[in-house]
Length: 301
Image (cartoon, rainbow, N blue to C red; front, side, top):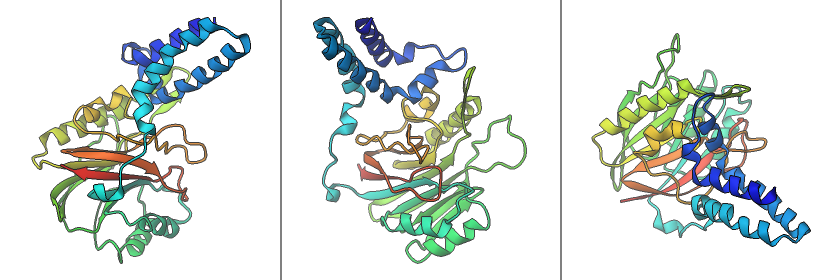
């Protein structure tokens, strides 16, 4: 039985795309927690040692190889700080954050070039604007998402990623042109709809639709270098984000599990790029949000 479990785990890791998404978007649900399939491998390894079973140890080579192929690179150390052109921070600050000023100061303390925030609501928005203004003279807000920058911003516009089934006002995306010393960069900030894990599976249809709209906007972007920062409510392995991950580079180093802040299980806060490399991502200390901030270092091509 342990050997069979090892083979099954290897199959899920290697062929997760073959797991059907219907019913209940089970494929996406598996992919959200895909890195955690390393835990059964550790447990099975302990069982093999207790039983002194060579057969189980041999079988464990399969899931170990599959997990290492998929995620081993994320564990490697990043390069030297001087090898990167931009430092960016992505954070869903939570519309119930009791300390917006402290959150803003904590993010600014990292000294990133760009700060992308979601769930900006009054009166907390005014606190973020006032607190970040000294170090970030340029900023743009559309609806509940915003971008703060050390570099000038132009061409700011609302990004329509609203699913058809959502009623009422709903503005969760913006696009801005960032004028950096290395040239112009199109920066996208987005907050895709939430997903829910239910007895019937993963409820993610609105998130998937919104990801499709965002993917079309990215495909139409004429500026060569693009950075996407956002709470995408999905991991980079989740097929629901394929309209984005098929067009953008994702982090080469770091797991940076960002949600929930109390016990992070998945990175749903993302830093992606086109014509640039997201060299690594890491989480920052907890703020008053239910998400952890994520910092990413970007090397421009």
